[in-house]
Length: 423
Image (cartoon, rainbow, N blue to C red; front, side, top):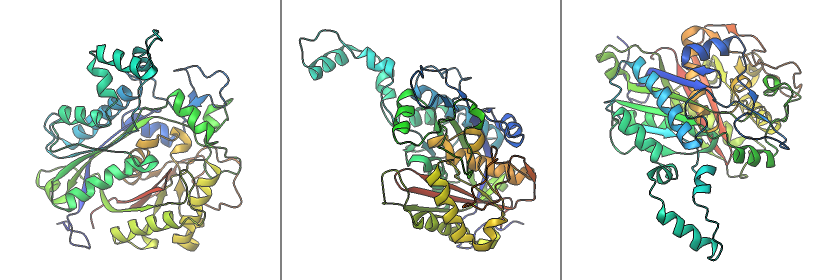
């Protein structure tokens, strides 16, 4: 019989359901087929005008009903779609889940349609007075809900019948991984037998594109969009903005086995460290990222030689890829040149708040399927970054453990360690 507690005497946390949506499609089947064939979901932006913009490509999810309705409705639909798949795979009641909800979602702001609804052409009043008068006259609950940070999680909690106050969090690009970490920790503390962790982001808006462009963070490789994201390559020039969602049903191994659930993987460890160096840049010596990796390994009770594969943060920005290589080479030493380290973002772009959850889902599938997705567009290796990035083609491999990295703007660093089987 499988051991039910880990090396620290805590309940082992299993994954019993996985759901995912990216620009490659809806659901694990379509996404996995595209990902392992090296297909890119990056394409020209058609959702809003891009005239005179430096970047005109993204990994937008344009095939959902709410894709033209604004960031909040799309973030909700992405989250609901991924969660529905995960809960169904876990064999649980989709309207009475019975555990807490942890949602990673982007910061909320008014969509342009709502901003225009608050506009009044009468300029006799001051701007503030005019805004208040028009706002008082609007009786539309939708505007209120889309400006509340927790409204998406509230609706998801009602839909799936989760328990307790739903938690909404935003830790930049580490958000999805943090949502998973919170679920793991809640189960380990004995607060619940199961948790629903979701990372969702439908905020590839004109404002987001412009803001990241002003930071010189985005790729401007517009002519051949599918070639724009090229992590760890010498000619990488920035990340590609994208949308998506990932959802995991987490359960104590004991509870999952007791109800006869299929175990899809094990959450072995979580590590989180902050970087106070700069609002967007990482500390040059990589020490916070190094500490996050080491914390995840220690939490998992694993040594550096016990990780089979790294699902890299791998954004394709010059600085971030360099920092991730520094952190991994520091932790893994001489192994770094031979252990497989690939980036899903080469195909799906950077899904921001959803990235950590989407990549955790793909990491679990890597172990279950025995296939490592490639890093595509790796045609011009960076001699300063010597890594086995599984270049351009998938690789069959027996993978028992995975480290998944999420290093976010503003100093948020979260790493997850997953295993194929219980201890």
